[in-house]
Image (cartoon, rainbow, N blue to C red; front, side, top):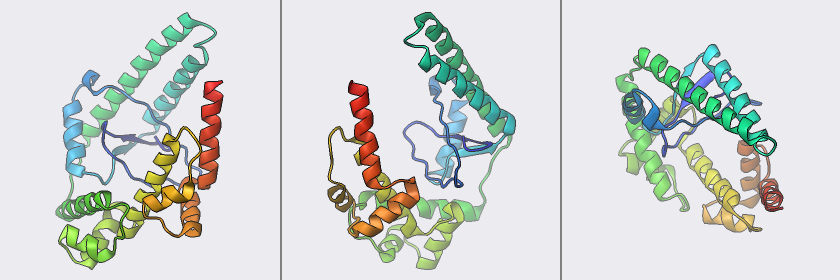
Length: 237
């Protein structure tokens, strides 16, 4: 959820989006096996591919999500003080999450979303591009490589990426590499070498790497490392 926009992402899928500055994004998770019409949602996401999650702008649904998150927070804070209260809050929050997820599915399917021929073609190009980038994320990749992978011209490739994502193909490569660096840092349980991680994912110019990382995540790589290690230390105490 970002502002009044509610997103839906299937488990195991990847979502790439750029939020507005100072935007707050919150997540809740619901088991697909407990949702009606979950198969229809999976079909919709499959048709749209990797470009985006399903989303609707709904102020009332977003407000319900925020209230539900508040319940989950109360449940978390009451775990130590009152096990019974925590158990009751957990059941209530689970029911609320499922109710909200079901509402999203019903409202989204009622919109009967469709993609035009231009969007479908752009999605096909984007999927081929992203697949190539994932397979070669630590290698030197140029625009010609992406055109070959998508079997299209440079102009068509750029138009397709900008139509679906609003960004250039090379922005995707840089963002994917930076995300891999961040995942590596957040998975660490001991001090790590930022330069080594960056080079592993094809980010060879360290000053530019740090600048791009801060632009994307709002903090320097070193700050992510420090925060990660402080969190591990606090959790282990």
